[in-house]
Image 1 (spheres, helix red, strand yellow):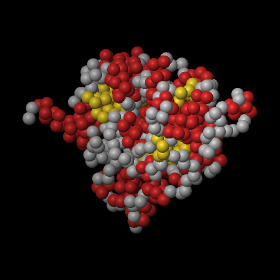
Image 2 (cartoon, rainbow, N blue to C red; image 1 turned 30 degrees about the horizontal axis):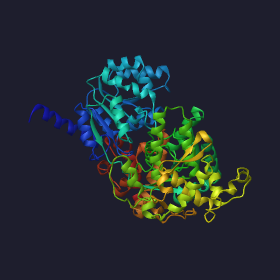
Image 3 (cartoon, helix red, strand yellow; image 1 turned 60 degrees about the horizontal axis):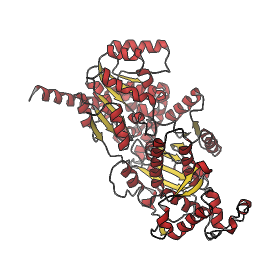
Image 4 (tube, rainbow, N blue to C red; image 1 turned 180 degrees about the horizontal axis):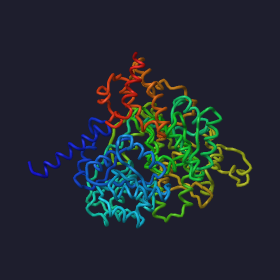
Length: 612
């Protein structure tokens, strides 16, 4: 064996030892071992791994194996304290530098960096780019740079941060320090931009499956969105933590008030709130149980709360990347979770208007339009949603059996004649009127506006009177999603025919649509039991509940989120093992040496008390 091979073997053994003794896991998952080994040996890497897949270990363990300081570039200032606390709980010397600290606090961290007293340092990109910070890092021994949420570098992505573009300076100033860029979501175009912007052309790419099989995807016709949301939460998640996403700050406040008035514990979160209030609400969501956070997309990136049981959307996301990342905040612990969305025609019109009115150039608007079209395709698909979602990221899949379409297949029908009627009506009103007016013409509604424009004299007036307004809106929405109609916001949201509409109007092309289903109130799900600890016996369930109570009290004393102490999955294992000694507890997944030392005696005493 050569010296290089021997060193490599030692590093692999050291990485596994850290995984077991520090983090409490007996083996790596998926591609983690290959990523860790590659970075430990000094290689650059681009890592695409779904939320909850264990990305953080891919840079934390190499930072501990390699000599020096691991620097993590993260945009998540509000969460750095929790990330540092979580590492401290397992015995890792971690710290952060960002704008929330006083000058004296920053100076203290800088002194520790210079003296080699820190293993992992979290830095906001704005701070990293300052001459002072770059000089500090050049004076230290750096083991690696981890660029978290790397999709923020992409101008085509859903969460662009201008300061991320400057991170190419890391390769220029520290050419011998390995860099690992990580993200949970990036289509091919975004990946290419990450590689180009961060100068990672020579980096090895690790792309894990994007599938999150524990998440059930469900998209419903929007009738009364807030009422449908309440029915969903009450029937499926009455005692669970969850996130509700809304497009506007005003709607966030209104929905949070509505849920509170109906007996739920809901908190608002958006960029227009006072910083202190926003931060306090986020802290409560992380530290307490059974809280529903109602938020704009300003909330959620980097949220490490493992027991979020649902993510709901009351407005259509701008892209599949955004939808995937937001829904991925549910079920990080691998237990069943729901991704639910209420979606209607107004969502399509609103998103088209936002693109049209944005200050972006035409190229960027076309990209936004393409991404929205893909999102509409996911909403209107007649086939498995998970297949459609994974195909967007270049991954082939089979029907999942765990989305609304697989579980209750929609009825499709030959809608060619109905679509021809719709397209004809748009044409006859000279492509100058919004969806609501066109639907009134089709249904033969004798309104003042119809009379004013003499549209009651048109040949298409009333040709769709056999269908309800809701049915026509569903047909209209699907027709827009198919690209046969578009919404022109320069003409007051007027519907216009596209070139693709011509063969349909001429009868040369048939159109299959989903049959409209009247929204019904959700009944309490029989699968609700899937969200409780069904794999525990009655005696084990008692132990588990007692452990949860102990964890809540301990987390309160330490002023950290409960999951920083132990995840539910670890406590389930403890309840099953019912350890009688520290040695019995040592083998439980998620219990490393530091946590064993800190909490072991308390847990053993608790087990003895309950078993006795």
